Each structure stands twice: as C-alpha cells, then as structure tokens.
Length: 305
Image (spheres, rainbow, N blue to C red):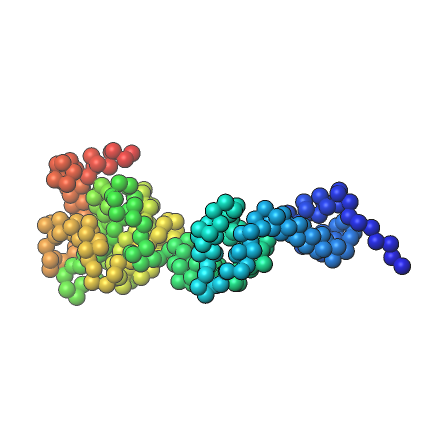
C-alpha cells in the first residue's frame, strides 16, 4: 500500500506561485515531484471554499438568482433589480461583481449560460493585416495609404515627380521634381522614356544634388514603372496616384504650368541642354510667390535648414 500525505502549507504556496507563472499542472507536478491530480484536487478545493464563502455572505441573493435566472427573459441585471425591489434589507452585489464571479467560476451559472455570449477579441481581419504588412514592407503603395502628415506640407523632403512631354513623336522629355513644402523644382532632361533609364536618371540626379527625400509621389505613367527601385535604394515609400486624378499631384501640375511659360506645348526638347533647364528651375525657385507672402522657394527652404 502507498502512504498518502497531505500537502503542507509550503507546498501549497509553491503550487500557487508556479501556477501563476503560467505553468501547467503536469509541469508543476514534475517540478515538485507530486501527482498532477493532487494539484487538481487542491485547486478544486480552493474554488469550492470560495463558493462556500460567497454563499454564506450572499446566501439569500444567490438562492434568488438560481431560482429566477433564465437566459431567455430574466437576465442577471433583471434578477438584481427585482431582488433589490423585494429584499430591501438583504445584501446584494453589483452587476459587475456577479459577472466577475461567473468569469472566475464561483457560481453554478457558467459563461455559456449567459444571455449575451461575450465575443472573443479576434485578430485583425485578413485585409487589415495585409494593409499593415504592405505599409511596413512594401515600397510602392497607392496614394490613399499616404500618411496624413504629408498633406500638411510642413516637412521638407516629400517630393512629387512628373514628366513633361516635348514635341510629338520625339522621345526627349523633361522630368520635374517638386518639393511639396517649399515648392522648389528641379528639372532633368531625359533622352528616352524607358522605365529603367528614367529610374537611374532620377536616382543619380537626387544623389548628385543632395536632394532631401522622405517620400515620392508619381502618376501611373509607364516611364515611372521602375521608380520603386529608386525609392527602395533611397529608403522611402513611393505613392502612386489614381488613374486620371491629376489633382492628387496638384503641386506638380502647377509647377509644370510654370515651366510651360518657358517651354510651350509642342516645343522640341531635343536640342535643349541641361544647363538651360537649370536656369529655368533657378528662375522659378527665385520667383516671389503669393502663397509664401511674396517670398521665393529659396527663402522658405532656409526656414527648414
């Protein structure tokens, strides 16, 4: 025959500490070298003792609750209201306290028997997880995912990029880069419209001229299909506008209209050198702007450096 010994107070304290750390009953049993069934009976005895303590203090209320509770038409709240109405001098717990007892397993009413089953907080749905993953890991994103602080135009480095077409049936074009905050413009001559050529041209120009970049916004032109490579190398996000929504790049469109004052539509860009484009961008950047209280882009840029 086996000799069974009761748990000492020291063992009970050790069991409570280990269980509070998230260990299973079997794991606690292996550590303390006792059977997991002993631990189970010990914990069950604690719950029974707690139920007895509750029953003594709120004996009248608990009896009333067991007799009258019905999940279909007599909820916990109704029971408490009716009990207070008919037993004026009896001790009555709060609604929250009763639900705490149920969650802790101190009453015979279980969670499954409640009128309103509490839904588990599920993880974010698949679409939201997908969107958050895109924000963290993808470089090219639609403009609707562009952060709202970029709209405030109080930070240098958020660029808009567009291409200005030359004479029809010519490959030569001009790439315009505009800072959304200072409205400073840079113009680059492009001899081809191939996407990888444009990507390399813009990246090398940004590095050579030490242009501050925090984000890039472009349209859906085919020449910008590979610009995500440039954005990834610069460590920024590239935001693509919706089709036929030029208003989403309003700064760029306004700047292109200023460039057209020097290079009207239908002009050939074939013989225009880069130095001439530098002069045009300098004149535009030095032009007093009403939006800046008749200061130029260079003056505004000095405020942020």
